[in-house]
Image 1 (cartoon, rainbow, N blue to C red):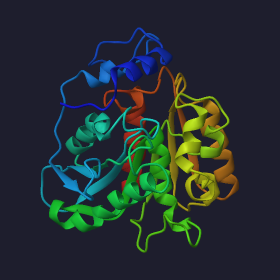
Image 2: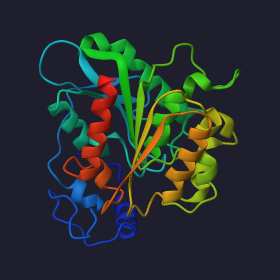
Image 3: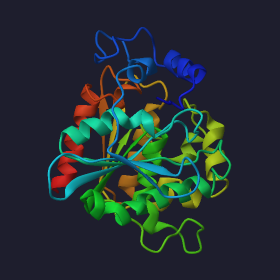
Length: 299
């Protein structure tokens, strides 16, 4: 099995997130936080199928289809990794994708070129994410996916990209990122996201303040979510109180800005939770995310 999460970077992130960690198959407890090996070293589930949306090896989507007939409620999933392919790819989300599949919810788990890959950055990373999302409409019938109420779920940098997908209808005229018929997003669940690229470029975070600038490429009006407000889509932020990668200010400042613009934004802070717990299916943080996803699918 291939993981794009490099050992050295995983070690650095783990150090930030406070060792020692609990056993690989157990949730964080007694004040200890999960580390990346606690997630990555466990038995790896497999998707139902993979779909290409472009010629690059990273322009691919994994589809997780539940058992049963009929159209399945669907989550569009976006991985993080500081917008860099060398740090993470879509496989880091496989355990929560499998958990959703077991609960009867289909998952469209997308990959994309990071800023460290040819064609990544602006506009490539955003065009990849948009094309991967819109490909859901093309393949929905084959995999029995219900596209009437798609919930976008993103972790870390993927939280930003999930929110950006919801904000695409708000892109300014003439933007290189505009598409004619973007996939409608009903609700966004951001798991430790970095939604405000302007703030991420000023406030110390686990990705580094220079990374957001490289991603935006001087186009903050098209890439930083508060610049696209109001999204007119419910936004649910789930964050760990002990997350050393994503500062608390990231969520609170974002909530203030978006609510001022008229958006429905809620933040849930989870105790004894760092960055890894947000995408581990046995944790309290993921239970909160599941509740938000189910509520959105019923709304």
